[in-house]
Image 1: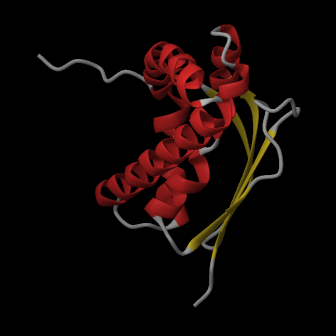
Image 2: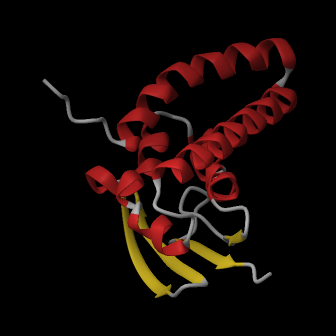
Length: 156
């Protein structure tokens, strides 16, 4: 009997329940700045490793393959996205609703939401396809109306 895998949104909610008291305890011992720096480093390393693992399951590390896997992080209506451009060398979209941000706010983790979620995006792509540049100037988590994701394949 196989079970339906949980969505990434559900996984992040479970992780947040553990991370919140850990961060509070570490901040009491190490201070806020040091704790947040360590947390950011751990999260980006996890994302980079996840990108490498994702690359092993994909047919290739093209932007088309990456875009085809977007269901992994949008599952359960976690994100509403508007694709602006999708070519061999560019993939651009806006996130117009982010339930990850909503969830972190609901859990009282507004300040950590960017580090726990948004901060992963560039590192994930670096692990998946090191030849792709990632840029984003704003996020819903940080109060913007939308998140602007821009990926561009570097030419050799």
